[in-house]
Length: 290
Image (cartoon, rainbow, N blue to C red; front, side, top):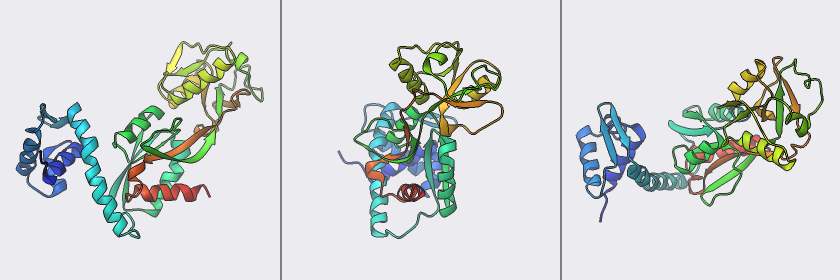
């Protein structure tokens, strides 16, 4: 069964823009041409690739699976162009970045933007696990997060490292100490994250190694909510040390048993490294660490 590149380009553009009209503008063709190509493509499948709505389209699960394959055609053409013109800098383009730590990585993003002012950087701030999935789904070009386990499709570059710390209200009776023990923390009111959060997994591991349970009546979704909860006296919170800037509203203390370092990585799909934008971001990251 033959699939034309016109069909694939029309589908990919619609997937990326969420609209037949915007897909047509992106490819400089008419909207009827886009819908005709997608209709031909869908006729070869047992179910729809797109769900139509008055304000645009939504991709079905079948469509998402197809995009993971067809996106590689675009990557291949771009990679060939980059190989034939290796000295060409990325021009006007969009680089999509999934970021799990703004404090750690925003200086790197700023340096990249300074060097490549024509590139629009779209930043999606999400959890570590969401970063990983977005990179694997090719929904973003670069992931900035701790990649704990190796993956056959992913490459990573170690950018920085830090340890787990405790965050206390200045008036807390433990705030005057230089460091805290796990057994001390286990006796206090704690502010924790949802189970899939990297910080929460680290906390559970540290407590578990010392036969302590993490118990709390306060569960937050993000670091900002944790800090506000600490400042309002709801308990002791936790963070990776570089993710928190000093502030008179709270005290940051090391945890004596939390000796494991978490490595923050720049992550990308292996076969996309040569693409403009991705290639240049990795280079800036490497130079930033020398």
